[in-house]
Every structure is written in structure tokens, then in C-alpha cells.
Length: 90
View 1 (cartoon, rainbow, N blue to C red):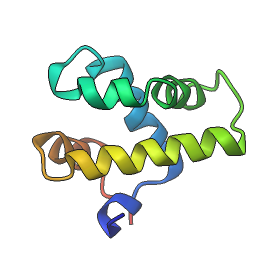
View 2: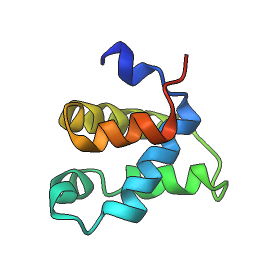
View 3: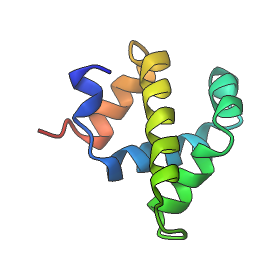
View 4: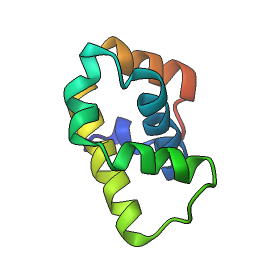
């Protein structure tokens, strides 16, 4: 994973994945990603909102989904949006 993707804290990664699940799950552009991450995205949402406690397995699932999201969309307008709206954490 690139340095750019690693600049986000785990909490921010959960929030981004939660937003993908809640805002983009019906978007054709994200259908394949959402379908492939049908457990990790709602899990990220629940972790992000304090609904469930984070286990090591949940953390691993969320991290794998983050990597997949970045790998698929790193050169897209979506990631430009992410960088602008979630900040470039240093």
C-alpha cells in the first residue's frame, strides 16, 4: 500500500469505509467493491459509530477492505474527494 493510503489513521479509515457503505452501496461504480466487502463495510460502520467493539479479526477485515478500496480507486475522483474531505494526515 502506498504512503498516501497509510496517512489515514485507523479511525479515519473506518469512517471512510463506513461512508462508502452508507453513501455509495447502491452506486454502480462501487457495486463490485461493496459486494466483495459485504461484511467489512457494515463492520467499519459499526466500529466507527461505537456500536461494536473492535476485535483483532474485525480490524484485519477492515484493513483488508481499506487496502482493496485504495488499490481499486486510488486514481479516481473518489480518492480526490477523500483527500480533500478527510484530510491528508501527517
